[in-house]
Structures are given as structure tokens and as C-alpha cells.
Length: 112
Length: 199
Image (cartoon, each protein chain N blue to C red):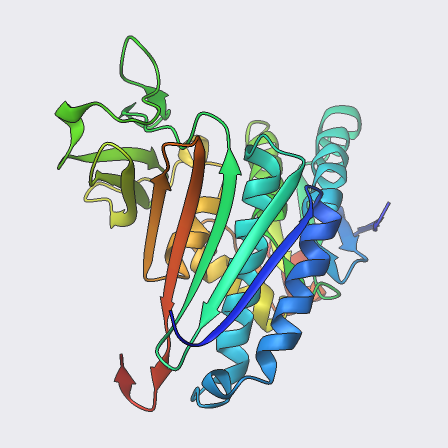
């Protein structure tokens, strides 16, 4: 799996360790978030995309799917570390209106 | 059509789509038409995403085991065409936020009903926009984006499929053309800018 999970100050940080975030790893991300919410009662997720250089529509779809899952239990997902092409994706799809986006991990964690 | 022409066919897999995308972008990087762009890297970034979404859309939705893409590029524009076989691109008339089909018979496959020609139908709706489908003829439709007058940021109204939205956003014209022999073509035109002139 291209993800590592750590807990920092009560926030679950998911690090995406892939340069290309595409359909193949989107399924894993969705499953991971669902698992964290359902089995570990996680309500605060910071998704670190700083290693990602390219993201496709299916990967964004997986993040949205995860957001729907976690907001159903009154939780939230914050996004951090967007490289320009990935930031462009959030702007193109207008998802920047939906997610809070931060430049670094500390800011994302402290925002909860 | 004058200009540089390229044709590719790959096995219908996401991995092959990804690989071909990078090959085409690498090839385009050296073309004169692209080197004239004021922001070449941004243009190439958009083209990379456009090609990738186009190919993966075909991989996910077309029936065949092969995906084919042709590219024509000149100083003014790039035209991408993907071909597929099957029933063709379905028009659906949606009913509200849930994108459910508002027709007792379900979807309209080509040849499209004559009664729909000239009509602009809401095909897909998200929290901020809709994808509209203009029926040009029994065999041709054009897709475009419309801003929603009434927007919603309710989480459950956000859809999880952005592929077609990105294809339309990153291009200037998206058409689907169905041929009598049962093949269909998505034709995507992206105009290139030279200096301050949007040709």
C-alpha cells in the first residue's frame, strides 16, 4: 500500500507515498479511510499529499468518498502539501471550496 | 487536416493509459506549436491531464479490449479523437441532485430521438456546475459546462466522478459522433494561445 498512517495530537495523518495518485491507489485510499472511520472511530484526518506530483479524477473521487464517510460521523478531512499540479486539480474541480487546504502538517493538525 | 498527426492503440488498461500519456506529452514537448506557448509547462500539464482522463475514460467505459487515440496538432489547436465500439454515448435526462434518469425508458443511445435535436439537456450535476448535452443531430452531441444558478456545498451533493468534467474544462469543444458502422468518436478540441491572442 502506498500509504502510512500516524497519529499526531489526536489527528490521524495519512501520508500518501506515491508520486502518481491514480485509480490504482485510489481504491486503497478509500478502503483505508473507510476502515479508519468504521473500525477505529477516527474523526480527524489530515491527508498529506506532499509526495504526490500527479493526481487523477478517480483519486479525487476517493477523497470525496472518504469525506462523505467521515462527515457522516461529524468528522472531517483536511488536505495538506499540494504540489502545483495537484493544487490545480483541486482548483479545476472546485474542491478547494469543499476542503480546507494547508501548506504544512502543523497547520493542518492545529486546524481541528 | 494539416499539422502533425499521431495515432496510437493500446491494450485497455489503466497502466497502459498512464504510460501512453507520458509518451505523448514527451513527444509534444518538442513540437514548435507548443514551444510558442507563453506558459508551455502549464499547457503541457493541462494536456497531460486531458489525455490521461480521456484514455482512462475509454478504459473504464468502452467495451473493447483496445483503446485508440489520434492526435492532430498545428499552430492553432490540438484535436484528440478516441474511438470505441458499442451502443454509443448515452444521453440521460437527470432529475435533480441525485443524477437519476428522468425518463421511463432510461437512457437514450444513438441514433438519438429526433425530438431531442436542438435541445440542451442537463446530463450531470454536481455541487457547483452541471454538464449539459446539446443534441446536434441523431448522431452527434456536444458537451459543455454550465454554472449552477443555485449552488450547494452540502457534502452529500458532491459527486465522486470528475473525469468528464475535467475533459470538458480542459478543452474548448467536446463532441461525440456516432457512426453508422457502430463506432463512436469522442472529438476534443483544445485551442492554443499565441502571445495574447486566443486563436
